[in-house]
Length: 479
Image 1 (cartoon, one colour):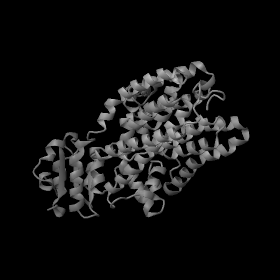
Image 2: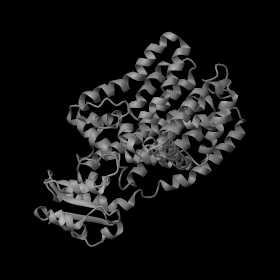
Image 3: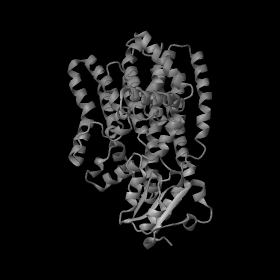
Image 4: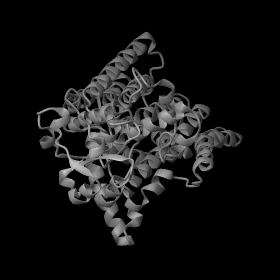
């Protein structure tokens, strides 16, 4: 409840009862089913999945070396408690991540409907739940086993408390405090929890600071003990050379931000929803203009979210970066319509459902089918090469399926690839012909020979479809 008298809706329905639970349960199963369908249709995961699996494996083995990664730890830690299933190979860890993320995403959908149905009415709640539950990007991040579903679930838990109770501060502080150890942009929402705690009573600000900052500080302290790196933003510092600040000047930095911001703006239609994304802008304008009632209660989270979205183009735009924020984006987008008549809300719901059809249809088709050769070759070399043999490659999904450690989450140059090939333990080199990173003469001087993929994968000619190049040392040739 953001307005102490009305909430968001003119007549808040606090007695949804079994009907509301029934709808929430149905939405949970629909969202879960679509995420599992998308999982089975995904040929290869996102490149970051390899790192989350690698960290989960390290956490399962014990010790704290897995905290040395630049990625936050909560998602891989939870994965280490569940995986691997049904076997112990990298793809089994990925399958476990798909199950975990699909359940998390489906729970977020059900809880979002339950919370909004009490505050905005059933039609707008169903609009939000369907947008989150059927969204191509939201389902895709679950199929990849990434961090976004866990972030969405924690965000929805915090939103449920904020929307249902004007004085809630404890649960928002706990939920929002875990966000930064899932994805660092979660830090953007912490001031909202502090403001709610202060408004309840200044004395509550102290425990709120502990709950919100404690998890992130604890993680950074542990990481410093392991790596000696005192960075407050490990991933940001690691990618600094690709940011607007590394362009060499103010003008160049602004040009970088402008290019990425323009791309990010259009990616919102896919990352949020064809109708929900423009409605979000209307919601922002309404909240900033009204400054009273429900709009007053949403002003701070709206401003914090806008800041978080505007910070993305400083590095690199990606439609996936909308997915964590979709629950909050939907609340802000639908807030101006909470006092509409039910008939008008029903019309908006119908329009929203129609706009969701193209993205939902895409969930039924294969994802990343072009990476099938990487997967097949990875399996073949994992089976044919000794476990201790290294493989030099700039293809993260191929290395994932070959059972080798993940690449650093950045661009791999031709010089770096050839340096890896020169290592004594290296047995094979794999890259794409169009990238021009492989130098056959240099590799031949190191004892490598070119190997057609048909020798390992059969006569289908997969190397022609993908353009893979494979070189192997004669001493470890796979028969």
